[in-house]
Image (tube, rainbow over all chains, first blue to last red; front, side):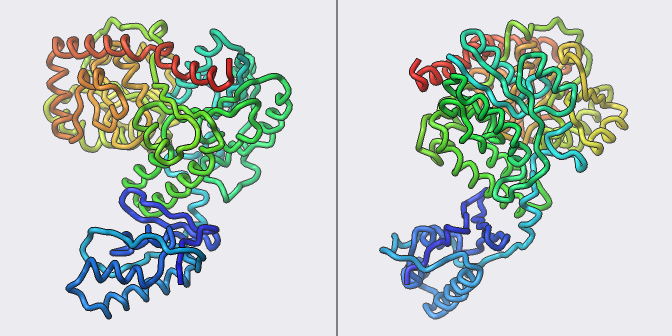
Length: 134
Length: 377
C-alpha cells in the first residue's frame, strides 16, 4: 500500500526546526518526534511502509530489524488513526534519506487548534476592539 | 497609468514603519501616475484624514470570522471593501496594489492586474516570535497556518514586491510563479534632515509598540542591556517613541525613573534631536527596519543586532555598531556615549550611505518599472 499525506485536510512543513502538521478537519496540530522528522518527507510524496523500513534498516544496521519495524508500525498506526495519511494511487517516491541518531518515530498531538484560529502572535490586540483598530 | 492602492491602514499620519512605506509609495507613484487610495481606517480621525486626502475609507470587519483564514487576515475580509472594488471595476484602473499580505485575500476583486506589496514574510516573523513564546508549539502551528495561506495566495499575483533580497529569495523558493522584485525601504531625504544635535545621555528607541518584535526589543533593553549600562553610567535615559503601547508596557515605562514613553509624539525629529544614540536591539522580525534608515538620515549613530540590520546593504551595516549579546551591547553604548568623535564619525558615514542608496525615489524606481512593464505601458 502506498501511503501519502492527507493533503485534503493536512498541511505540513518544517518550521524553525520542528516538523509541524495541521489537521484542519479535526482542529488538531502535531509535532513529529525522533526519526519521524526524517521519514515524513517521503510520506508527503507517497511511499510504502516497506520502503520506510528499508530506509531505517539501511541507516541503522546495528539495530534489530524487528524493533525498528515495531516502532514504525506503531507510528504509522497513529498517523492513520489521526487521518494524517491516506492510501494513494500511483508509484511510490524515493526512499527517505536522513542523517540523525535513532529515536523511535513519534507524534505529539495538540488539541487547542480552536484557539489557534483566533491566534495572532505578533500583534498585541486590544481585547475589546480587536487588531488593528485603535 | 491609472492605479488603485489598497492599504491595511492609512498613511496619515505616518506613525509606523508600515505606514511610512505605504505613504512613500503613494507619494512617489502619484508624481507620474493617477493613484486612487482605498484604505482601512480606525475611528473618525483616521477616516477624516484619509477622506480629506481623497481616499476611499472602509472600516475593519469584525462581524464574521472565517476559520479557513489566519486571524490577522480576518479584519480585512470586508464586504464594504469588496463592494468598493466592484464599483471601481470599470473605472479604467490598470493595476491594483494590495499593500501587505493582510489584504491579499481580496485579490479576486482586483481592478486590473493584481500586485502584492509585502512588508516582510509574515509567516517567518510569526515563527520567530513563537520561538520566544511560552506557547511555542501553538505559535509554530500559527506560523504554518499563515504559511499555507501565503503559499495559496502568492500565485494569484503575477507581480510581488519584497523589501530585501533575502525576503525575495524566500518568496521565489516557495512560489516560482510570477515575478518577484525587490523594492527596498528608504527615507525621504527631502523631509528627513540631518539634525543639529543637542547631545545628552539619552538613548532613542522608536517602533510601533503593539508589534511583538518591538515589544521584545524594549524588554530586552530594560531587562538585560540597560542594567549593565546603568552600573557604569547611572544618568543614561531611555526615550521610547511609538504608538499603541499595551497597558503592561505603558506601566513599565511610565513607572521607570530612567525611561520616557512618547506614545503619540507629533514629530520624532524633536525627540531625536536631544538623543545621542539610536538603539535597535531587535531579536525578532522581518523585512528591513525603517527606524535604522531614519536614524542614519538624521545623523544619529545606531547600535543594533544582526537581526536589526538584517536585509540592509553591507555598505550601511559597516557603519552601524552591530552586537547581539547584552554585555557588548551595553559596553558599546557606554563607549559611544563617552566618545562624541566616534559617534560623529559613525553617523556621518551612515548618513552618506543612506544618501547614496536609500532615498525613496531611488529604491522605489524598480517598483515603478516593474509595474509599467506589467501593464504594458
